[in-house]
Image (cartoon, rainbow, N blue to C red; front, side):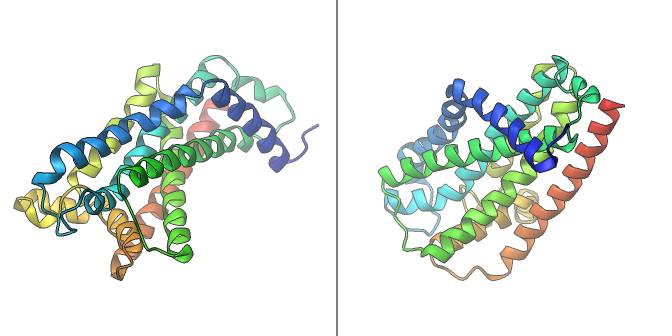
Length: 257
């Protein structure tokens, strides 16, 4: 008999985490690209970019870091879609029709695994940023706020990833959805101020989700007033999370008939 949704989710999450631990290159690969972007912009391009944040490498590293963390999540959730797709194709998900287990546990196990893996990858990115000069006077409260926003963003992106994991017809299609998510920070305030962009691009950059999230995290880390950016940031994350979760549940029910 089922031990209840929480126990079933814990068991399946343990299974999924064991798969990740047996293949630590997944987390390493997830962190490699964001770290490469960080090093590229700081040591190659950073000297030619005026953000108003300062002239030192540590100053620009701090400016970049919020956007790099979002790219880390966007890169990491591709593996969530990949792992779920493999479970669907192998018949693992289908077998739950005949088992006394909470159906929601399957999806939540993948989501929680994604959260853990992404937190580890983001910790690696922050460690590299500290190693190359990033410093912050942010207190515990500010760091907790940053962690909360990143957690909400990770949940939203992970539930978004569940949809292609359930509906894709190929392994490439399951993970390809993440490419626009990885590219989106480049059309935001993540790397340069939006004021330096031409009109239409500037308008898009100032009104898309990433800019408000990046600006909020950056303000928290630099001990600046957060202002009104926090509300669009939370609103975007919450709206994407709710819509993606609803779509994933619907797709899952269709998949199980």
